[in-house]
Structure formats: structure tokens, C-alpha cells
Amino acid sequence: MKSAFGILLAILLPGLVPLGCSDGGSSIQASDSDSDSDSDSDSDSDSDADSGTDSGTDTDTDTDTDTDTDTDTDTDTDTDTDTGPCVDPVAGNPLVTSPLTVVLPSGTTVNTYVLTFNEDVFNVNTTNITWTTITGSGTMNSVTPVNATTYTIATSGLSDGDSYTLSVGTGVEDTCQNALTAAVDISITVDGCADDSFEENDTLATAPYIVEMTNYSGISYDSDYYEIDVTMGWEVLDINLTFTDSAGNIDICLLNSGGSIIVCSMSTTDNEYIDHTVPSDGPYYLHVYGGNCNSYTLWWDDLYNAP
Image (cartoon, rainbow, N blue to C red):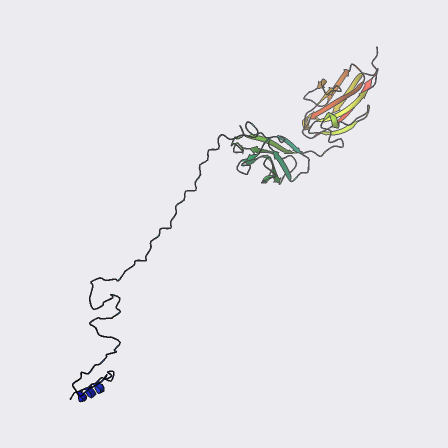
């Protein structure tokens, strides 16, 4: 019976290998080599590490890897630096140093005025530089910086006899925001007269030399100066200036060699005359002025000064 039972087990459980049988009722020993090697120990490798005895310890670990990092950074870069009071390179308010009166020659249609200041200035633009027409139709086209002290002002559409005022406003300021103390007006006119042959004789230094007993023709608009030379013993001067007063009044003065006035003739009628004895021989000057483009003829002579 036992041998038949063993054979049956071998058939039904081919994994069992009979270790031996004996007729004397020896027991059948079987070694179950099943990989489970049952020993009431559950070798399930469940992550709970059950080993037949549930230790009740759950080794599951939930790790929250979400990380909320606030990378917003508010950095206040405003810097309030107190540098103290402004140090003005040129003390006081700025000044205009360019000419305040400009007479352009006849025939001028365009011009560039050079505006200068005694220090660096700012806000020199068409807001603070204005152009006012007195007579004429000329216009100011642009204000251009050359550097911080020099600016050019371009004008066009000018014609003879025109008159304009170029104004520099108090919005012009220096480095320390010191403004012009008052607006500065610059007179710009266009000579309405054609130059005569003696121009430019507007100063003593440019006065041409004229000889006695000769008629000299001129046009009076600005100052005209002439140099004469008086001979020793002939110090009595006879000077005639001929013109028509209704076309523009003209006056004349006799000056010494230093430019000081000796005597003048200033009537409001046609022509002017000077009859005067000078203290010595040597150079003297004649100054003709006025006239508003009126023409004139100048003549002079020195006469014998009888003792």
C-alpha cells in the first residue's frame, strides 16, 4: 500500500522525489524544494515587508517633493545722495557776451548770428530764443549749439531796410540753474543803403585820408569818419557838407587827433558848415552821421591864419 501511495504521489506531484521505501513500514520522506519553502512564513516581498507576522508597521513613505520657492526680489535701487550745494564754475547769473546791435550790409538775405555767453548754459532753444519783426518778413530758422557757451541762430528772408529783435529769455540757465536776470534783446537790421566808395569808414581807425579843396560823395547811414591834415600857419578850417535835409538830416563834427569833439554843426535844414581855427597843425578828423541813407557832398580847405 505504501509503495503504491508513493508512486501515486510521484505522479501527482512530480516535484517530489522519493527518498526511499522499506518493506518494514519505513516512512516516506519527501523534501519539498518548492521555492516558497512553506514554513508558515509568507515571503511576499510586498513593500509592507509582511513576513507571516504583520508587525503593523507601514513602511510606505510619502515624500512631498513640491517646493514653493518665492524668487520675487524687490530691490530698491533708488539712491538719494545729498551732494551739497552746487558749485557754480562762474559765480552769479549768466551773461550774454555777443554784440547786442548788428547792422548787416545791404543785400543781405540770410544770416547766422553767433550767440555767446560767459559760461556754460542750457535751455538755449526756440522756446527761450524768440524773433520779433519790426519791419520786414525775415524768419528765424534754427538755434544750434556749437558748445555749451556758443550757439548759432540762422535767419533767412531778409532784405534791405529790415529791422528785427532777437530776444534771449530768462529760461536760459547755467550749471547751477541760475537764470539770466532779465531778457536780453539783440537788434538786427539790414542796411538799406548801398555802400559808398569809402566804406567801411565807421571808426577813426578806418577813416580814409581826404585832401583839401576836393568834393567827396558819400551816403550817410551809419557813422562816416574822414582824416584831414592841417598845415602849419593854415589853421583856419572851412568845411562844407551839402545835402537835402528832407531826404534825411545829416550832421558833422570836427574832432582832434584823439577823437574828442572840437566843434559840431547840427541844424535841421539843408547843409552844414564849420568855420573854425584849430590850435595847431597836424591830423584832425571829420565825423558825418545821420541821414537815413541820404547822400551828401563833403568839401574842406585850410586857410592862411594871419598873425
